[in-house]
Length: 423
Image (cartoon, rainbow, N blue to C red; front, side, top):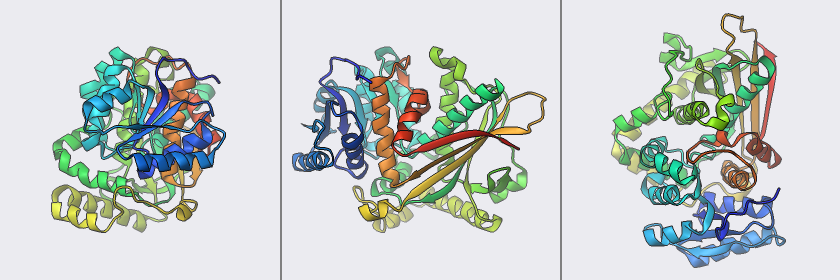
């Protein structure tokens, strides 16, 4: 497909290309995006940027190499000049609660499409309050959380909802996503973000942002909630048909917030109203546990870890000494050994009819989770550049990009399959 004509100097500008995730994103662009893409990598260190550009050229000598743009994220005039050159800006510079808002704000103001890979839902909630209306007026498509957190659950939910509409002509009821298998290690940037998050937001702000449908543009008033017993809530262990024994997911509240926003956006966006999940939609995320004892131990460890990170600053300082530092992460050799698999189920909302069938989704990827994040970001940019999305501006979600985005991700290794199964 042809790239859109837009009048900007670059199709894509990648900010933070010398970091761990940024470098992998640049490599994905070099290998997988159209060879006529006009793109640039941006940052403060020219020697480091030149090295990234040289490495990209080695990966694919047939494509246009990235231009190099020097910009200090703390200098608003430099960042504004940079953003005005781009049709799409990808930023991998975190923690976003420290470095993210200047780029977010300027993209919203200038009508420049924006992508990031944050997992900081509290920061996203703040950006929605401050800049969503500005982005709507300018036409900027702003898509945060477009990485391993929280794009896979968001896209899987969208895919199951589409399947239920086709198969049953029905909206979606109870939906569950599970992290069925995970073999990966967090990068220094991710760990730094996690530790910094609790220093920049109050506990109340964090709790408010992670409530179900907290960042949805419309309230969820049906009263429908995910079902679990009192004992399941206390022990953190449950079981579900076709998914097995499940426990608390460390990413559950972050992902739930994003999926809840998708639910509300599909209700509000004129071109997406026929994709709306339904008024009785519920959603939950879990982690696969081999047995109930293991599930209980995982649940307790997550609860204790969250309390220590929230209320004990010396614990955060201690953790910082023994984890990857920003810019560091899994070695190239070990990246090839990483993998992730999600599974999910969704019931059609058929009123009083028996729930004997449901949608079953399986999504899997073999390779680095941070390379997958690079794929999410790069393929989102390509979707914006090629597809007639019929989207208004504003703070959106990965699922708003639709089937074209899912198809592009499938072509580069993230497989998402949906079928109908018996309950």
